[in-house]
Amino acid sequence: MKRYIRLMLGARSIHLHECMQGNFIGVDFDIRQDLSEDLSDVWKDFNKKYIPIWLANYPDKSKVAAGLACGSLWTVAKGLKRGDIVISPDGLGKYHVAEVLDEYSYHDGQTLPHRRTVRWYEKTIDKAQMSENLKRSTGSSGTTSDISVYASELEELIGGKHTSQIVSSDGTIEDTTVFALEKHLEDFLVANWDKTELGAKYIIYEESGEMIGKQYMTDTGCIDILAISKDRKELLVVELKKGKASDNVVGQIQRYMGYVLEELAEEDQQVKGVIIALEEDNRIRRALAVTNNIEFFKYQISFKLVKS
Image (tube, rainbow, N blue to C red):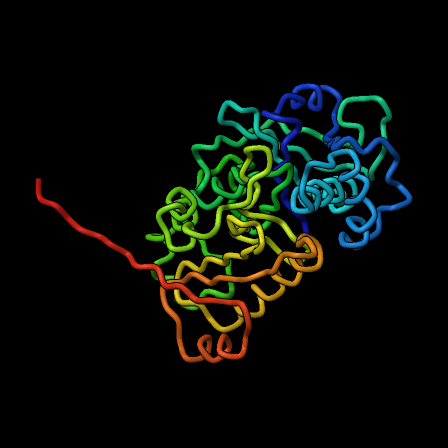
């Protein structure tokens, strides 16, 4: 299946034009060695070796930041296949589109040395034409963001067709009738985090002033929000459901929590989870009754018409 990845080509897209002129994409992360012999099909194996190397270069950084960096490095070097599509922002409201043509190669001493050869399309994507969900995904922090769930919309945009429909592609949502109304739920929660009950104890994970805890990628999917307690003793996985959550969301958040525990948590840190949805039912209540360290929160919609 063809993948679609949003890729930042340097901070603030500083290397975009050089990449377009040279028909390549790439990343750096200060890993100065050829990765060819270590690009296993399993992201976890790659991270196990290269997280310590990255942390040696950045001893003041966390395992969370290291996991994000090494995961992005693996995605570009190995995760992308021939024929996959990359979109990269220019900082001016447009995304440039490229198709991956070959395998990984290392270019020692050059800009973004971990490279893939690509063919850049003439067609660009205007951010203003994206659905709100796609805008949020392409605007997430980190070097890479998997936006494959929006393949149909992206194909229409690349083909020159405008689409504004809102689509729920999440199988863990049973009732999607409120999906359109709540499409800003994640952004609203992040913007108002300090005013919530969760914000009293936790902060959304940051590194060097950059919020990296929103849409944090793991080897089992994307965590909606990764937070840390103010005393730094707990990591919190937050899963948002924009409708009525089904009980299989419990297994989903447990997978994310397992990843955080094994790959990101320090020895003295615990991992907890929170599911936020419009409603719960008996199935999810019973699943949570025998599950440790996961809480359920309901959100409420307030809508009012005022005559002027």
